Amino acid sequence: MFRFPNMPDFDRRALLRGLLGAGALGLVSRRSDAAQPVSFSSDPFTLGVASGDPAPDGFVLWTRLAPEPLKARGGMPAHPVDVTVEIADDPAMTRILRSERTIAYLELAHAVHLEVEGLSPARDYFYRFRAGGADSPIGRARTLPAPDSKLQQLRFAAAGCQRWEGGYYSAWRAIAEDQLDFVFHYGDYIYEYGFVETDKVGAPWPRTMPKDFAACYTLTDYRRRYALYKSDPDLKAAHAACPFLPSFDDHEIANNWAGDSDPKHTPPEAFLFRRAMALQAWYEHMPVRRAQRSRGPDVTAYRGFRFGALADLAVLDTRQYRSRQPCGDGLVTNCTEAEAADRTMLGAAQEQWLAARLKQSDATWRVLAQQVLFAPLDWRGFPRIADTGVPVTDVDTWSGAAAARDRVVAMLSDAGASNVVVLSGDLHRAFALELRRDWRDPGSRCVGVEFLSTSISSAGGAPQTEAALATMYRNNPHLKFFSDQRGYTRHTVTPQQWLAEFRAVDTIAVPGHPARTVRSLVAEAGRPGLITR
View 1: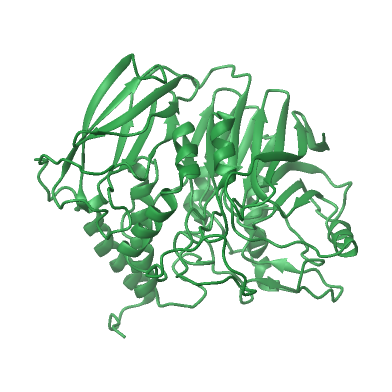
View 2: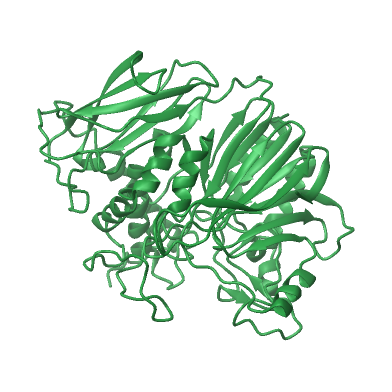
């Protein structure tokens, strides 16, 4: 194995970041802007269109030219290609407000990210792309309200964890039909695993990947994986229906990665190269701004969105800067390492950014949109977890860095945030929890609520008997709702209340099933806690 001789870990990692970052930043600058004519014999917009990361005067518009999406280059030539973007104020695109030209480059997988500015706040806009004589589907985007706007309602979905093999994406079709203001995608947009014929218990998957899909390590691997996922018609419909605020969790790179390492303890000089390839592909396939373009193995994924005076939403990154999971990762008991004061989930710079943003905000609702369970949870009662009388903790969640969670709670208190909502995912189950100073004491002060969205298609697991379910609720008095169904969470926010509707589809084994609301919970402004409706 190659190693940098006589170089401490810090310097070796810094050098790797510098080398990879320099290459990433120079990709496009070395190429001429002289796009060459192209004529497509088949649809180049097989991966659909998307908008994202809105602002009061605009948003990002995305597409990727890929007439043969599962090929290494998407069936595209090597040269740059002209792409025209049209923006209208009507869904039929009869009133074109603007037409702009951009260029799709091979180095970025012929993906384009057009940052549109100069539009009016709190309005729907419609758009399409044109290239080589072909037209894309029409998408809907929406600008944010003005910062001082007295917004009276906000409707959005939180969703993620969409393993292709796990089942069909009917929940994404339901989200498309909801006509929302935006979607927060908390992560696990793809899964990096290679082709397998059956699941863990030997059952056939509802659908399978191509057999030549190995586990993702290279840029081509990750690009092909995104192309497969984004070819799904229901996911394409959701992206075309409203803006996305994308984040990433672990499977965009490797299961349960943390900082500069993965659970296999791959040396940083290898893992950081893999991370660089994965984040490059993530940027190429997400409707995010140039500020979120990867710099080698690094990306600034945390950022904020202001919805008038109603809500301030901070998208956090709980993977890139966190401490490695303590006590060997997974479900553990008596993990004193998790209590260490120097453990972190966000890193120092992101913590400082969050503290400053919270203090500067006067919005009614302060929202932390992130990836993993924030509240403590005792997992006794779940399958294959023996009840020895000692709480069982998942140290891949914030419980693996308890001091970091305490620091965030202190930030919220210092900022005077009285209406706090945490959005999370990752666990393939739905949870609604009250965030209390002492999670075991129902009478302890409530400082906010957490809504953890279930998965779109990734398998979960639930207590297998009524007694086990009762054990789970008894050990977690702050837990107000649990479900192991597939689906998403739909949120409706007003100055008076926050309504969370847990939406589920009855089966993902076949396509086309509708979603239904299985439970609705409300948090009232000025009265922390959850009420079942």
